[in-house]
Length: 175
Image 1 (cartoon, rainbow, N blue to C red):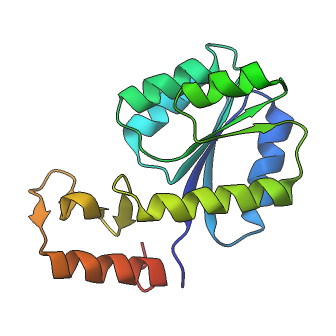
Image 2 (image 1 turned 30 degrees about the horizontal axis):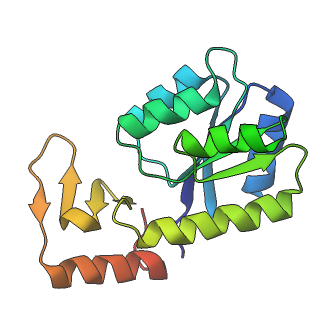
């Protein structure tokens, strides 16, 4: 059984957000959470780790680019992919300069977006910023440790870290 990737979908368009949640649900590899505002997204990233954030640029309470910058300053290392109805080179540059990993213009084909998101997820899993949920533990391979809420951290050896990474990626660890 493979581990589901945690996606945060942030868009104020209720119909689009519901459609994206429904589309991702068709694949057994994703666990989605969705919110309509930047402030709700920022709060969600403080409460839990996500593997990828899909973030609309035009949100009612602040621009997605500003929210992206705030998330990065708060230590969010997961890939952030900006969604927008605004095309043009300058908007894309602003999105990427805010800390986003990618920029997708609406309307988009879901299959193409899905392929791009999977590519970002593969890259992120190999990065130093990767964080994995293993049962009640948060596994941080770069720091070689398991963290458990309200308890002390468990330091891991290099070998233990590599075994956990291998098992997680192979789907041998169920969260």
